[in-house]
Image 1 (cartoon, rainbow, N blue to C red):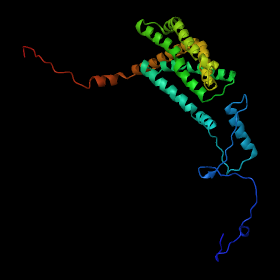
Image 2: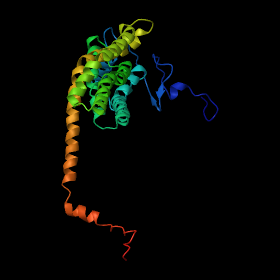
Image 3: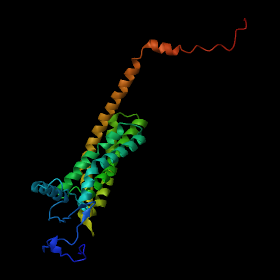
Image 4: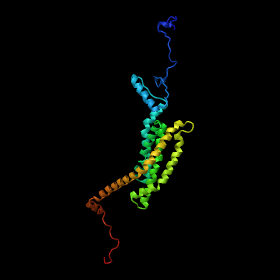
Length: 283
């Protein structure tokens, strides 16, 4: 470095050089210096457990408030999927409810059909826990698939019962009993076809099967449990919903019957009767 007179000034006059090991470059995330720490999953450890342990370790060591931490890559995708999971499931259920409501022109029967979803969700989560799989993004996709697959059992029974009540004027008990008996074989055939179709993915056959296996396990578990439970819960739910619908119609009928008669007379006499067209010959 040159001074004002053109003479060289040694660096020791304004700085001190100390040899030490350091990084060749400083990485940044946004406008802040950042350090990336990579990790691998231990055998038998899920990504959710690893994320929880890392957050717990960061709290135990007492990082200052100026230090911010965030996950990248697969861990970030996992956290974002968990944050949007309830919204995605509720949106899918609402879309199915709207379509079924338009199909049956009713607000009650779509609820009866959607009651087949809780057993399927319980079965999917139970099978994932039983076989040691985490609720990953692929498993969530399996849960969304179950919304479209499982409700077919209820649709088969409810649609048949409504047709019998409309055409043959059967009672709700007789219609749903006949639907459960006559639709048992088609329900079993479609469910077994879906289970055997997804079974290779659940077993884990083929390259990259470890990524798709949670999807197959979730779908198989949901189909098995829903098949065992919905054959009993759907007829019961249908009967209670029919009674609720009859109660609503009864309340509306009683309200119409309680309208005052003088009000009806006033409405009826608001318009005068028309004048006669033909007059008597004597006139």
